[in-house]
Image 1 (spheres, rainbow, N blue to C red):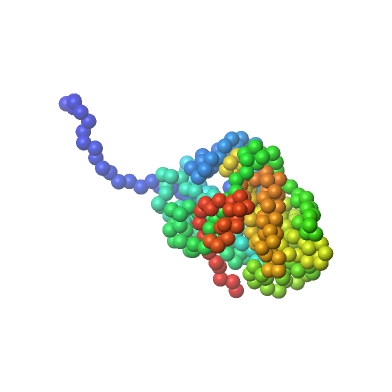
Image 2: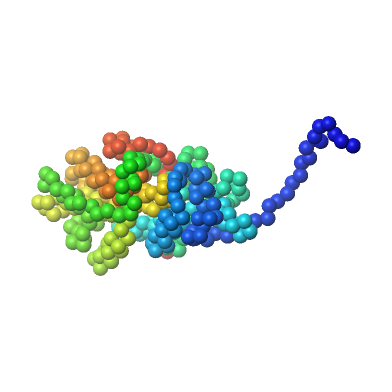
Length: 330
């Protein structure tokens, strides 16, 4: 007997059987929906297979960057991803800090614990590398999720965006800083001789540094220079040859924004004897110039509430929340 209308809908429950694996991103993942997934996070733009494979190769060669994916073995679809970039520092006994970036889960698979698995794996990598903490920036709505992952609200994330055409001018992400001298002050990159020039004591005005021997200092500086993605700038008083200001610029490889680069500003401090004389702004603007020369589409930093007004004067805008997770150290 034929019906003149559809029967009432029935409700049935079922489970999808997924065989999920977390592993590093590979060059053949271009065909496994990786870029489509990232488009759920932000704009990816046009990335062909050749550019994709070249960027994967760059990441694989970098000992301090790792991109992970969650892939279903049956469908070969990537359902989640996240990345971490490790920053060698001279503070906290020349410690390491992990920056967690670009975490996203396929929208139809959210709420099943996959995002937390990705974050936990990234944090495990940070611990095994020897990081004393992991940090990330997130929208206010995502704060509860990261709190469940062990992070705590810390500071305010601020951002400065560059013109898109300027960002495309340097597809390598590599640039050298040109020495700048004016009014008896010189802005330049950190040099081996700065071990005896007050650099470490200056950082001690920011936070603890611990005991760092000259041999280790030189080894760490050489490793940083070798990455071509981390730059430490200093301000030198040319009369006394004393280091009176510093900032670190960390360049991060991305797949979003047409395989662009993002710059992170870290460890900003000026000597207490020269504060209020414009040197803080001077070195921040130098960091911005360097990030622009590297072809970055944005530069970000985290700061306390009372420093927001200063960074706004430097061209930054408050955007998200910085979260931090500290690890126990033996």
